[in-house]
Amino acid sequence: MGFAQASPYAHTITFPPLRPTSNRRFCVSAVKLNGDNDPLLLAATSSASLRFHETLRPDPLFVDPYAGCLVSPNISKEVIQDLHPYCLATKFIDDKLLGTVSSFDGLKQLILLNNGMDTRPYRLNWPTSTILFDISPESVFKTAAEKLKGVGAKIPKSCIFYHIPLESPDIKHSLHSKGYNGNRPSIWAIQGFPVMTLANCEEVLSMVSTLAMKGSFFVGELPAWLAESDIETKAITQQWLDKLFMSKGFRVEMIKYEGVAESFGRDFTARNYNSILFVAEQLRHSDEQMETWRREFQRLQDEGDEEGFEEL
Image 1 (cartoon, one colour):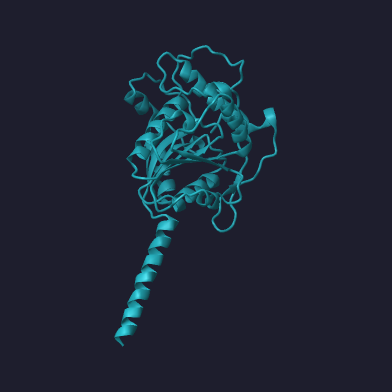
Image 2 (cartoon, rainbow, N blue to C red):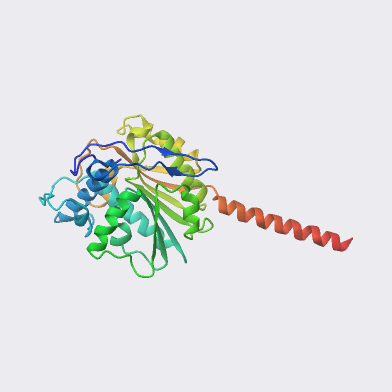
């Protein structure tokens, strides 16, 4: 999902495997790598370089004022003419997140599954009462957080931000301990998140499915090689995507990068890109919704039993 070098046209790399634990938990094995040898850091830095170069364009799709602090100070500042599909996806996800969160009443829940260098919590204008959860590799997040603090990046006022390490033994428990509520709508986004196998992808979808309230949304990019088919063959890829998401309770739509470019009035030539852009809606009730329903049903049943006893 990420890129091996800090270049707009770098190749993909592989990530450490996610490993499921018992009781439907979700975790990742810690990777003991350091500095320049850490593939997660390399991938995150490469994505930041794409946002940095997009910001330098005379007519950028978006502006990331913090991407510059996340890349090498020696990075080329030459303006790149070609529009990169990663940047199209970033703009599309930005708009979907802001539009959806703004439609929520009261508390607004946003969960970002990312590579540790997602600047969305700082660069986007989130509405009041937005609670942002960042789920990403701990080592990369710490590196980015120090750099962002150094340039004065701050979360918007009246918003709350929590980081949950990807290496946490139980991410679901960590989310709930920070105040996540499965009885309220939420929107989830995935971009740059380390997914190595189809089993990893299904694990992520299962986690979101059990946590997201019915009617919530999931948007983002998945590695195209998961489909084991040619991404240009849209019908085949869409069928694979439908089957994958429906098995977890989501209705999904694959978004064409060319269509995104056209919606923003941009010229875009399709290139060999390794991701699938999607938007999905949760059709099932979350675990918390089901538990609330169960308790309410039990309460009504108990009250009915008591009334019947009094009549006798």
